Image (cartoon, rainbow, N blue to C red; front, side, top):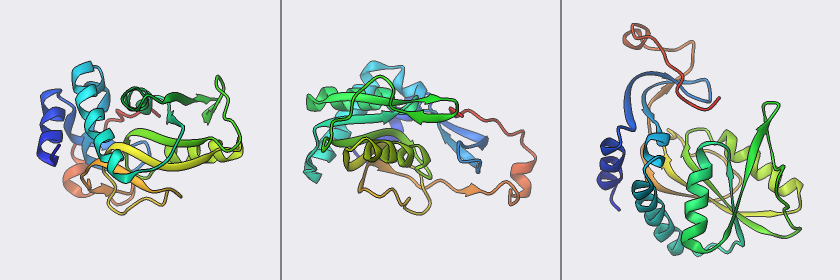
Length: 189
């Protein structure tokens, strides 16, 4: 899929939002990808994740299983796992931190970390640390949208279906025009 085709799926689903948003990282932005609005549509999810899997096959990473951070990455990880016929597990929040609670990570098991949108990669980094602490390895990270302005240092290679840097601002550096709009926090934290 081209960048324009991916954006069209987001627009069709009403998932490309404009306004004043507080991102999970605490930074502010004029643009927000509300992936939940895409992921509620099974056909759109299958289309985007199928295209992501096609890009992953070019990368030729070797892994046994797929893992995702809750919540946003779960549907992406499940659909990527389905396309690749791989097991999918997830890390979930427990007392504000991600933990692998319901699943076993076998020593030496190699994972692909799947996420919906990456800006700073904080949730992905948490998942990578959990996998390594359990004796597993991470082959790479896959996401639908990489909206980072500078490539996040994840400790593993990144494959994004679409790279679309979105301008972000620290809370103390919000431009005057954005200050005039009430901020909303549509993310998961």
